Image (cartoon, rainbow, N blue to C red; front, side, top):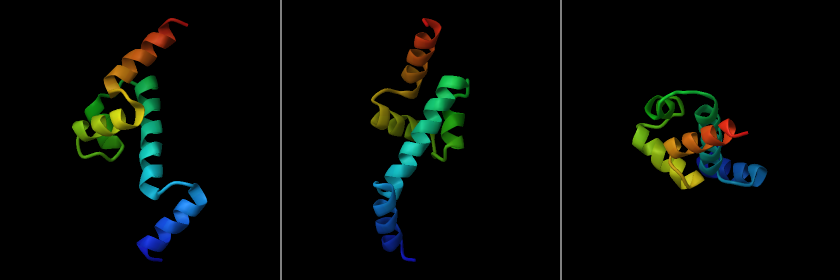
Length: 82
């Protein structure tokens, strides 16, 4: 199957292009790791397949509207105040 055929089929089934799906999935995994763990941004970036912490931070901020560290602080604060 060609890449174009795959991308068209994937989009028809999933409703989004493959790279959009992959990015969203990575960000969900990142949010879980930032919420539940204490891994550094650099090691988390590597685990999720990003070349650097900076590339991961940029993608995370683009998808969520805040940096990974701000997300971790906000979530930790919200969980502590329950």
